[in-house]
Image (cartoon, rainbow, N blue to C red; front, side, top):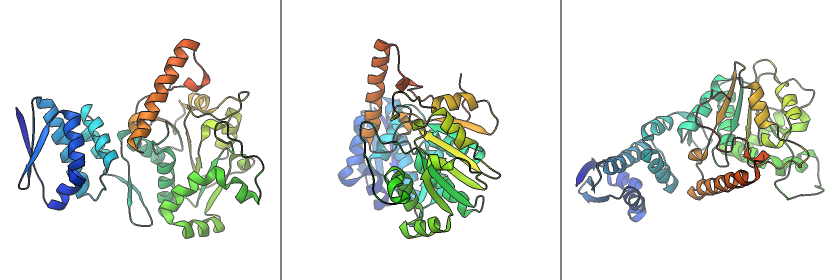
Amino acid sequence: MHTEQLEFSSIEQQQAVFGTQDSYLRIIEKAFTVSAIMRDSVAEIKGENDAMVSRAAKVVQTMQALYNQGEDINRETVYRLIEEAAEDHIDETFQAMKDVVAVTYKGTPIRCKTLGQKNYVKALKDSTVTICIGPAGTGKTYLAVAQAVQELKDGEIDRIIMSRPAIEAGEERLGFLPGDLAQKVDPYLRPLQDALFDMYGGDKVEKLRERGTIEIAPLAYMRGRTLNRARVIIDESQNASLSTLKMALTRLGEGSKMVLTGDVTQIDLPKSVDSGLEKCASILNSIEGISIVRLNNRDVVRNKIVKDIVKAFEKAEEAKNRSHGGTRMNQHNQYGQYGPYRKES
């Protein structure tokens, strides 16, 4: 029987790490087939397998460190750390969670939660153009907005321009929408606005939009413009053709940066139109100053069930493609591995 002992600095730290009625501890015990008991301020973790005990202890130690740096701990945090510990990546993940990308108007720090996200933010900082491809819930849009807000606060840019194709999801068709341009396109651009509201608050966002410091518009409205000293975010890029993405990329002027984000398993274009995102990444891959980032289901930071859903759909799509010889939905379906400068073959 192997045992490791971990000391807690306070009852508050213990409650935050172990969860209400030790619910987080129960998850850790089940994941690694260990048991834990408290003796005063010391937790004893025991188990038959030395490696499992060490990994369980590492998860608890990392949660203690996250609590000490002011991070909220929830069930998703626990599941994510368990997965990283099982593959011996937990130290790298914790290092990724130390850096602050931006701070919300409420004072909450925005941090990377996975190694893949850390590499993504590094690419956003270092590259003129970043193309980020990954499944839902990996923080593609949210981190891009957070980085843009920080660049604006630091005076690196003069404005933020956010755009996405005005394509409806799946089989849903909204039909005629009443109102002026802003009212017509708001339903399509709401995810971008939600991220901005987290950073600035609703009133500040509206003031910045009125001054032109923040601009949110459909992708088609970028044609013919030159965008200087701006951070340009093109969301849902899988729903743009190659020619449209070329148009957007060639709008970049002096002192500007652009990020294209997209999920190639959620293409809503008509069957007669091919998504240009994967082709764009392949064409631009070898150009200095352009980074291709691929996130995968390990980077999903929403509810744990979202990660399970992504995995299930990936398996179903793989099975379908094996029996039918492949479709456009299978474009790099596994999203590759981490790395902002990953080169396409």
